Length: 135
Image (tube, rainbow, N blue to C red; front, side, top):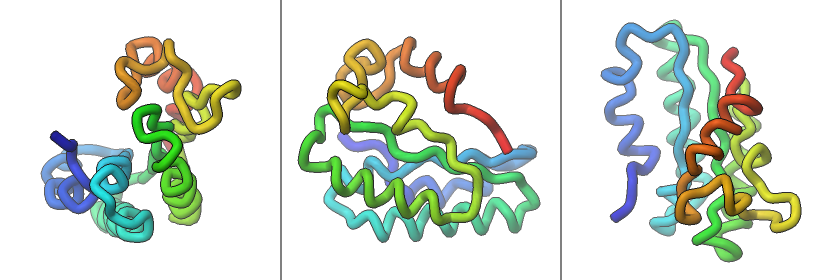
């Protein structure tokens, strides 16, 4: 079973953002896993950035993590989507580079992932210590 795509995340953005001061948008890997184009995911992320600004929130976007179980096929699409994310005009939380294994580009270090899809506790800790800097 797949997780939420960016269009599905956007559908409940207003509810999720109620009472917030900052909006951190993270999404896109499930779009890619379901064969959707990076451009479509980027457009949905851009719409969420616009909506967050309309709500008066400070907005940041997390880029897409390396995906061990999708490597190597998904890697070019992840890199394309991350390039598009950097063009959204808001701060980017560098989740991909923070968890990418320098000895195995395009994949998370084994100790930073639970099963090749999601970060482990150590991976989330690393994201919090290194990558998570709010605007």
